Image 1 (tube, helix red, strand yellow):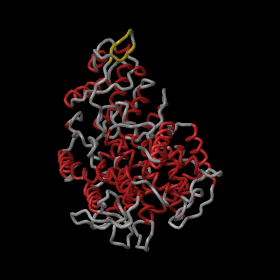
Image 2: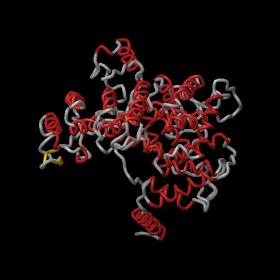
Image 3: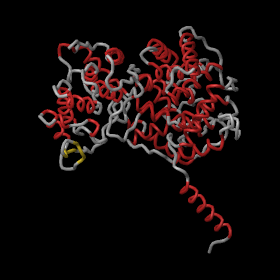
Image 4: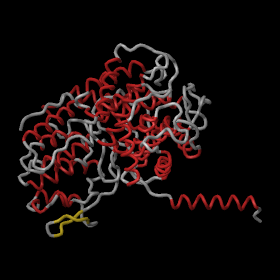
Length: 543
């Protein structure tokens, strides 16, 4: 028999189920989300800078500039330019920086690097090198990062350093393996038995020990940093060094010592995915069962967006409208102020300014980390993430390519290499068309596509340029760079799209159809500089 209390519990449960069922499905493209972001950006563009208890003037300029740039892509906006100026100020101060109590310099250096790498990694490469070298100098002996005057590591600061390292790796910089492994080991040694993390880490020395000040926001920061660090080491997919440079490059232009250097770097990775699986499982359980409470709401939501976005890499699956995002959107709909800001309503802003909270809210709403990672569900490899196992197939219907389970990508190659190439239209290629999952077969397909880049038929060159972007093979980048000078009006544009996919520089370059010679030259210079930053020993030759 149900008593009154049982009926109350049942009705509550049914109400919660019904509420969840009717929850709106949001995404960054949803009109309500876009309207919120627009109002938040307008606030950051025009608002006054007033630091909170845990803010600095420079820090606010950095995070506001970064949020507005990620939301708009407009580096010319005054707030973005001011953020860049603040970043340059921070970088200039690093070589002679001295300990200053609980200075926010580690946070500031991290966000400065992320902002500069996002706006123009090539232009600001010297500054990024300075930050990377400085991180190596201030990393604690236990592998963590924190206040310079304290021996302990700080979970919150660790997450921003790791995000900065990941961002720098994506723009072609060599992040020291040992630095990343030491940070991962620090996070492993400071996890709480509950699967959460505290503020200043208590080292476990091989054991899991109770941490101090464990909260949901810090725990989300900890698991996010751990997974991002694992991604830096390539635990969740092949990374950029998946193929030796001898493959597809004339032997005369490959140095033997460079090959040995790459092989040595591969051996440097001593950790494996199995070393962190237990911590990840416990942390995932904590995230699923412990709700957020107290201050730091928007800081936590941005940490959550990073964590969930990288977890999508682990599962190789992206949900356009996940429950955690819908919940966050609904919270932010209630909490946005009349002036477009967040933080002044609902008691969420306690230690940081409304500009900082607004920046965090915007970065959450636009799914900024997912945008940096790229889509995982389009049969395209972004920065080394693995291709799906199935191979979509095609056939010709008249002069058009359509999907068909009876043929394969091999048919397309045969058509391109034969007399039927002129009938192949790149715009009609199936969206999910992939190269072979088998490594040997895919290598052979990539080699054939590379040869087709110099085909006499423009249609073949266009399709080859398109598919090489899905090859997960950075050794093809020089071939695509050469294709930027192709006389066809469309091949350069397609080749640059593929370079963006291979490099994960998804916002770089904007070649359109029929680019001018000056635009082609500028694009070629840009991508050559990017590739030389990744492989400085490579020699480009005129053809």
